[in-house]
Amino acid sequence: MASTEYSKELHIALLAVQRATLLTKSVFHSHAKGTLDKADASPVTIGDFGAQALIISALQHNFPDDEIVAEEEAKDLRENSKVRQTVWDLVQNSKLSDDAAEKELGGAIASVDSMLDIIDKGDSKGGSKGRIWAIDPIDGTKGFLRGGQYAVCLGLMVDGDVKVGVLGCPNLPVDDSQPLTEDIGADATDAEGKGVLFSAVQGKGAASRPLGKGSLANESTIGMKPISNISDATFCESVEAGHSSQSDSVAIANKLGITKPSVRMDSQAKYASIARGAGDLYLRLPVRKDYVEKIWDHAAGDLIVREAGGQVTDTEGKRLDFSHGRTLKENKGVIAAPKDVHQHVIEAVMSVLGSK
Ligand SMILES: Nc1ncnc2c1ncn2[C@@H]1O[C@H](COP(=O)(O)O)[C@@H](OP(=O)(O)O)[C@H]1O
Ligand SMILES: [Mg+2]
Ligand SMILES: [Mg+2]
Ligand SMILES: [Mg+2]
Image 1 (cartoon, rainbow, N blue to C red):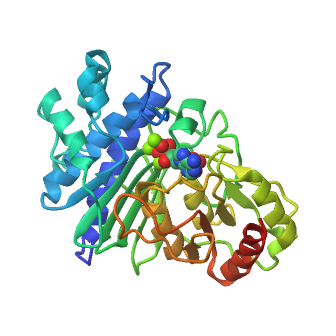
Image 2 (cartoon, helix red, strand yellow; image 1 turned 135 degrees about the vertical axis):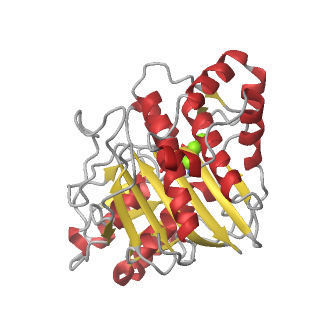
């Protein structure tokens, strides 16, 4: 592989996300997802813990000096031996079939105790200096539990700027031109090979390729769909009404003359879907004033959309700022759209939200 800036980071990130996504698929297709409730009452599953362990272990092997901000922590596993053992079995069984690739990721984790320590290595405070990876081992855990879309997400930030982003979307169609649907469809998903990996490197565009289960292959460049008439656009929004205001979205659609119903899907699959031109606009409209978005929910998607020809800002038109630690505390909500219509969308958003 030719060595250009961030090519090794991209390569390792793709393999690490592929391996972790395959782990989550095996859980998605089994009936026991090992769900626990976290302190904030949100769910976490054996898939989240296992995927986080595998990704961090690959990053530590390749980039031992980098910091890591990851969503989950091992506390619940340290306290629950049954779930701990299930996660450990899962992690031990999750190897890439390509031996060379598995070796590049550092191979298996040595013991159950080191797995717990590895999970807890995602506790960096983040910030504006140095190399920091952001991991969401399963984004859209509620979708994962419901049988919907979810994504395995990894981004590398350098001095607060996202340089590399990878999303594993196991329940999206491989074909970039397939229309956007809410239902994942009975034949759209399987326990192994189906699904997509999206990626971007700053300044180098965005791509998709089949998730597969062996060597990475068949990359294609992706781009957002041009919008000639905004009233023909489709919104892509959360399934969870508590994550994005559906009444504000209706008012914004009215302002823009949009009559098509929104497509609702969980996770950063929304960013991926608009980046590949299957949907047009991603709206995340704050419901609770006190909710602060987390960097792992947006880092990879933000870069992939911008590299595919889009603009991503908050509801006031400010770029997402990943330099303030584990959260996007300087931003409220997210509006992602093709560059040339983004300002028009923001004006509609601001007039609706401003008049509340
Ligand atoms: N009140 C809230 N407003 C916005 N996002 C929220 C939220 N509560 C939780 N979330 C985040 O929404 C993410 C899912 O986004 P979406 O609705 O687009 O599928 C969750 O990620 P996890 O599933 O990784 O916990 C969680 O971090
Ligand atoms: Mg969560
Ligand atoms: Mg998330
Ligand atoms: Mg998550």
